[in-house]
Length: 235
Ligand SMILES: NC(=O)c1ccc[n+]([C@@H]2O[C@H](COP(=O)([O-])OP(=O)(O)OC[C@H]3O[C@@H](n4cnc5c(N)ncnc54)[C@H](OP(=O)(O)O)[C@@H]3O)[C@@H](O)[C@H]2O)c1
Image 1 (cartoon, rainbow, N blue to C red):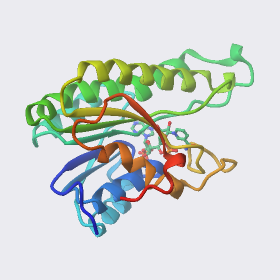
Image 2 (image 1 turned 120 degrees about the horizontal axis):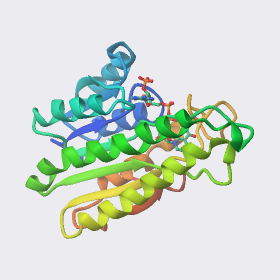
Image 3 (image 1 turned 90 degrees about the vertical axis):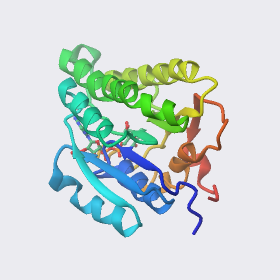
């Protein structure tokens, strides 16, 4: 099989289940030598670590509660101590409970959504950029959402729009380098976050979710990909 990511290292946040699990296995199959599997507990990552190894990469489990800034920093330091990563896949996210009326939205809905979905990926990215820029190779993928006109999940939706804006500004900061940041919308999937009524099986996120990690050198930064439109992509 084609191994376009041979020798690369990758961190996939939130890879204990859902989209992240599939992406972690996919990156391993594409030749990554090390895939850091992240979740909130070692036990929760054990199965995926075995899948990563079965796909041919070394799996390293890392844990961090991403709503706690000190844990985000500790995760970044842990990775920097091993030389950083080539691929940073910012996948982990939370969705607050459905709020029938906007008056029911709590302050915690806002802070939790932004801590995990915006501050954590932005802080991780800022910390892990230096070795990527030194090597002049990096792929950063930020998981966004097509959620629209859903006030019941307003903090989740707003956090994804904030992430989009961060990705856009980051792309300008990375202009002229071979560190390429992208947004990926996985589509509505029957994961724990997406729920049982979603349109698509989680597996349909592949191969499209891998495309931003496979962009050729010199590609434009800041692009937006829809995994469901890339279902026929051939690697
Ligand atoms: N599913 C959809 O329909 C859909 C649609 C649009 C966008 N997305 C986006 O796609 C990405 C993946 O979603 P998914 O459906 O795969 O979600 P999921 O099945 O709920 O998985 C979430 C992952 O994030 C981790 N995580 C959750 N809360 C965390 C926290 N506070 N700190 C650290 N890690 C945490 C979980 O780890 P633990 O196992 O330790 O909890 C798990 O690995 C998200 O960015 C989501 O917004 C999903």
